[in-house]
Each structure stands twice: as C-alpha cells, then as structure tokens.
Length: 160
Image 1: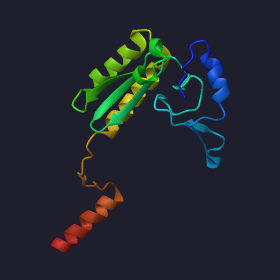
Image 2: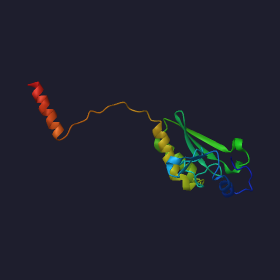
Image 3: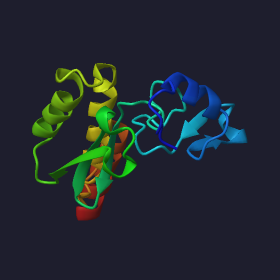
Image 4: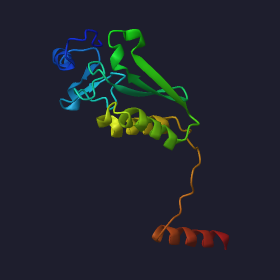
C-alpha cells in the first residue's frame, strides 16, 4: 500500500485510504476508536500523523527475538519498495540510554521526523522492557499494625 507514484500527494493517498485499508482495525467495543497494524506506526493509532504507509518518511520500532529493530523509510526510494526501508538493530545487551540516544539521533537530530521523537523513544522503551527477563523472586510480606501485633501474639502463644 505504499505510495509508489511521486506525483500523488501523501495527503491524497491518506484521504482515499482512510476508511478502508489493510492496516485499519475497527472494533465495536472500543467506543469508536480506530487502531492501526501498520508496522511503521509507532503508536498504533489510526491517524494521518502516524500512518507509515502514506508518509514518505516513517519510523517503525519492533522486537525481533532478542533485538530491537529500528526501521526507517527512505524518501528518495519511494518508487523502489524492495529497498525503501533501512533497518538498524540493537542487541538486548545494548544499554537503554544508548538505544534511546540512537533513536533520537535517527529521528530528530537529523531532521527526519522530529515530531515523532517522544513516540519513538516510548516505543523503544516498551520493546526493551518487554524483552527483559522476569524475576521469579517472591518477597516476604511484612505485616504492619494490628495484623503484626496479632501475628506476634500468636507466635508468642505457640512458642510458650
């Protein structure tokens, strides 16, 4: 669904495909909200700003195994769909700050899509957190107040 003809405005492409496209998700139980499954959509909201299929510049961040992949759409290759995406991946051992800094550098500092900086960092953070190993340590609950007094009395009564 990518824009493949340079003389068509992305606004026209979005206006035509706004109500019907392959990425659109409509549900009756969401109160009229529409979501998007577009891989180049950072927030998964169906709106012109975040739509990756019609914007000449788009950013996508996704998890691939133990890596975080940052995908950017190259505007000078709009007529070459096979090579229009640039992929950079970061392993799970990459520190969070380094990952966030590289996301900011690739989005805002190069003048690519500065309006998506916060969303890109938030998405990278969520992907990084989802890849963290879960700890199975159960903490002992410390009783306070009247429950602590009752437990102490019960312990004293059982030991005597």
